[in-house]
Image 1 (cartoon, helix red, strand yellow):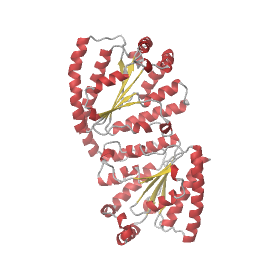
Image 2 (cartoon, helix red, strand yellow; image 1 turned 30 degrees about the vertical axis):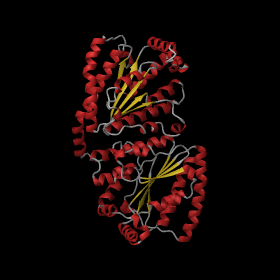
Image 3 (tube, helix red, strand yellow; image 1 turned 180 degrees about the horizontal axis):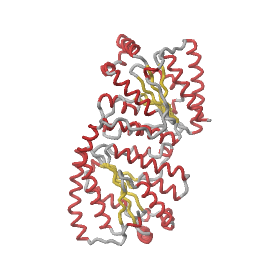
Image 4 (cartoon, one colour; image 1 turned 90 degrees about the vertical axis):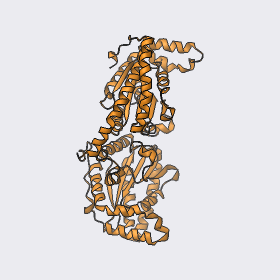
Length: 497
């Protein structure tokens, strides 16, 4: 892609003034329209050192309301970021609907640098490129606009600019030994950049390679691209929303290997455990899990435990028995309620990406990302296209986590309708338990059959060989607690082999 760029092109000051005079006010107006249309926009500035990324960003944001954008400068990951998945730190910085996130270097920085320095195996680099393409497609499928700029200059021009920066006391600090080293290795980096651009130039997030030796040429191209792409995204939003609402295509076939899971109606809920046996098994399992937690930290293996199930199925008590065996410094229980306004303004996985454990730690989710294909589907909180697409997005999400090294254990706590009614009435009639029952619980019960159909689809389409579902027979709470503990222990032991 880089060889197609004409670096000799120049633009006279008067011509640029005329172009900018039209485009800058248009960009300012589009920001307000973007806010009204609730289109989130991500702008990336990548390119050579000294290509002018900072000055280009400064020029662009002068035309924007500062309340509607954030600028992020990407450097090497710090200790906390390095203990999370590759894209974790960028999920944190996604814009809310109607706003901008502007990146001075981005997720591409780490990939290109790692390849130049041979810091990662080829297989890992290829995986990260694939993750980037998945990431960008997932965002654009959910209404994000991603505009990617690569600022291109020649080796000679880069050397000239680095020298000029070094000559001034005010800017000398900006030039590092690494900058000069990479200028000397320009040809190597050229090939790396060119291949990276080719591999990630997708229909949903294409690259815009900007000839940046002449400032006027570069800024004119940048403004023209921003106005064109943002304007098009705003214009297409009504039709896109209408198509999503009218979608009737069903659930797409999975791209991942699936594990057969029984339907809920076929689960034997008569399984029980005697109190004496329960106490013995609980003590044994908790002792084993405690030991395993220490080994997980030593080996820096993250664990994600996902609890789903019917209202009053016993998730809280089950989680309590797991947590009792863990070092409190190394785990977190994350209860998931209805999404907040801030969460609704972002991709539905955003609030889960931001709560992932770091290496060696355990996160237990009390309800999870599967709300997208259950309650949101049943209650119409998202469009048919959104929840139909979510099965694949969730499988992709979990695949990225297991490729990173995480153990994922997913539980569905199953009870029958009669047992749920008994527990509801017990909560309602017991003062100290009354807080556990809500009007929403009763409303959900009225839609039992719809929820059951959604759960069966969830089990069928998201039980993968890398993150399978375990259905826990939970009419008897004691049996359920021990089965969950034993399943978690087995998954951890298998990972530690």
